[in-house]
Length: 83
Image 1 (cartoon, helix red, strand yellow):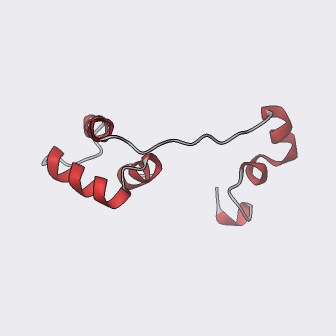
Image 2: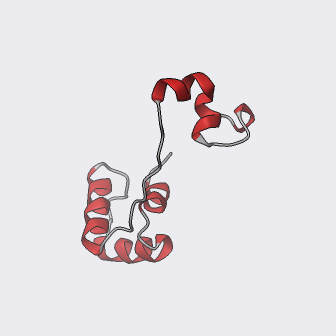
């Protein structure tokens, strides 16, 4: 969506009244930080899907992404996924 479409990316702004009534109640859930094993498995999955270059180094990439994102799932996704 283009930024001009709405002033906020809040679900109410995106879905509008008709969409909110169709979807029903919305309650955000808290997702805790990845553990070391979870983050490593996530990075291996992204590598398997071809999102990293051929010279992918699990340990170095793990350390860099863990430091930059503090192992928060949304930040890991934003940093690794191309879109």
